[in-house]
Amino acid sequence: MTDNAPTICLVAGEESGDQLGSELMKALNDRLGQGVRYCGVGGERMTTLGLTSFFDISDVSVMGLSAVLARLPLIVKRVYQTVDDVIAGDPDVLVIIDSPDFTHSVAKRVRKRAPHIPIVGYVSPSVWAWRPGRAKKMSVYVDELLALLPFEPAIHKKLGGPRTHYVGHPLSEHVEDLRPDRDERRPVSGDEKVLLVLPGSRRSEIDRLLEDFGETVALVKNEVPDIEVVLPAVSHLDAKIRQGTQNWKVKPRIVTGLEAKKAAFRSAHAALAASGTVSLELALSGVPMVVAYKVDWFFRRIKDLNRIFKFSSVDSFVLPNIILGSKAIPEFLDDEVKPQVLARLLKDLLQEGPDRQAQLDEFSRLESVMRLPQGHSQSSAAADVVLSTLGANVQKSNRALSAS
Image 1 (cartoon, rainbow, N blue to C red):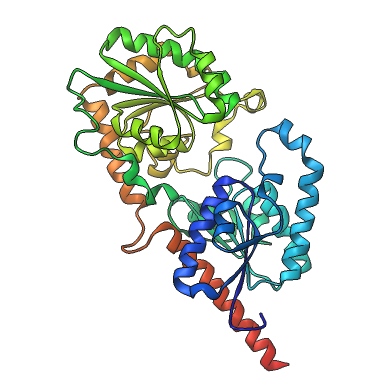
Image 2 (image 1 turned 30 degrees about the vertical axis):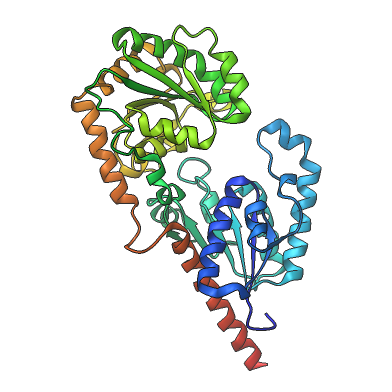
């Protein structure tokens, strides 16, 4: 650092990272003013806030094995370019944000070539679910890790990972968008009920679950005739979902877009969902659910969930269950996914009773477990750790200059 204005490098690899990075930049600006210099890799949100991006984030923001393989030479090129540009910029701190295949490849190389640059990891890879050995390897090149889930610091300590700080989940900052006003969610004891169907946000998930979900909905409709079925679809899969639901006996109302999804959550009484972050959204919205998932052929060959999930407090693949250490939300995997079973449970959730109330009680506990200290937001808690790392590095640099 050549003057009093710090240089912070942030490297994201996809849209969700750009969102996290932009909120972090806002929190840092609140503390540092507008004098901070930002460089790295980011999308529109981050560049609007002043980040000088080394290249367009779309070069590395790809999903799916075939898409990654098709663009692999460019991605590898961008990894090495990012490393060179980070080292040339000599920032006071490097923050890598999610997208571990890309960002951690950058961090490892920066640590080898410029070990004086402190590195903060933002979002822990799911070492508690898969490849736990990554935690210890991460400790070599990540100095501080920002975790979105409250149990992750203890997991990393157990596995020998980097020093880890729980900074809250981004959903906690937008939870009010998912919660109904007085008139948005009608009483479950009334005549009109809304059942959400959420078959996943990836093509492979939809391929494996859509038929079973359609059969389940038909069985529920036989028992609870006054339900409306709403299916929030991600825009790039809208056509696929419409085609896949054409033969459903009960046609869902398909909605697209973030605002329509939030509105659907606010009106819903129960949900049938694929496993994923959506289960946490539903829990924070107060929507009881049944969760189902079918893994791909590779994981079917492994078929050892006790080994895969042994580092969580409960054998589960549903985030709220893992966070709470309970089996509050019924979950079904692979051959356990039977429409008759799912429908029976959903029928019970669509009326007042002990099964519905048990989930609602656990959702209240979930909010308490995930809550940050008074006055802290998720982005401000993340900024606190980055600033602490930044301050420690500046002090170290000043001592080195004095000694020379």
